[in-house]
Amino acid sequence: MVYLTRKAEFSASHYYHNPDFTPEENQRIFGKCNNLNGHGHNYTLEVTVKGAVDPRSGFVVDLKQLKEIMNREVLDAMDHRFLNKEVPEFFNQIPTTENLAIAVWQRLAPKLKAAQLHRVRVYETPDLFVDFYGEV
Amino acid sequence: MKAYLTRRYRFSASHRLHNDTFSEQENKETYGKCNNPHGHGHNYTVEVTVSGAVDRSTGMVCNLVDLDGFVAENILSRYDLQNLNVLPEFAANVPTTENLCVAVYEIVQRGFHRAHLEKVRIEETMMNSFEYWGAANAQL
Image (cartoon, rainbow over all chains, first blue to last red; front, top):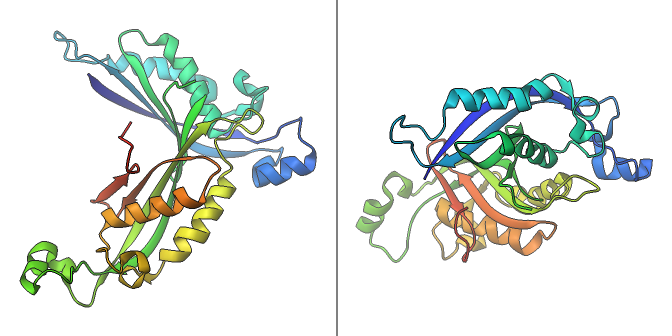
């Protein structure tokens, strides 16, 4: 088994707000992130797949295909977007880094054929990142 | 859905690697330049990884404000701009980054209960890093 990681970057805006909370609760729990005008980050995405090395190609996965899938399923939908308003997963879910990692996993996992998705890592800043391994 | 959240922090501290039970020669052989009697310092980077179910109402494993507050109060204020050798946890333990990793892990594990502590990783320099997953845990 060999693990292969592909990185990508995207920039997006978001805010944290739960309509079931009172304005005071939203402010207390989410602080500055509760600003409804939104704020943005340069996200770094790391997608790790695993699989046996194909004896003919020497690949775990064709990187070109992996890059195309990441572009189509994730970057086209999220890069330079307002996550709360333009990405359906976040119409009813708070776009925290945790939920973003889960959403990226759910977008990619069904599209990967040759290799198996192992980990999605999303950096919100260089000092904060979330890993998701598909654990329910 | 279970997710793993990692936060990076920084502190600077001095230390000297020296074991009183070794001879002078053994200390020199074992620790080299790190045995300099006057000590030396590093800019450490600490990574704390916690895990848990993502709370549906907040979208979080735990509130970063709580984790940042705990680490600032219990780790950064304890170690930043200090000499590690004079701290009680290093009275009988050489302040290597291995032992520092274990010490930081134990402080977080004892005092922070808002998420499950997975591991502590410390970069002593850009070239050296150390991880501790707890006595019973293996790496993912």
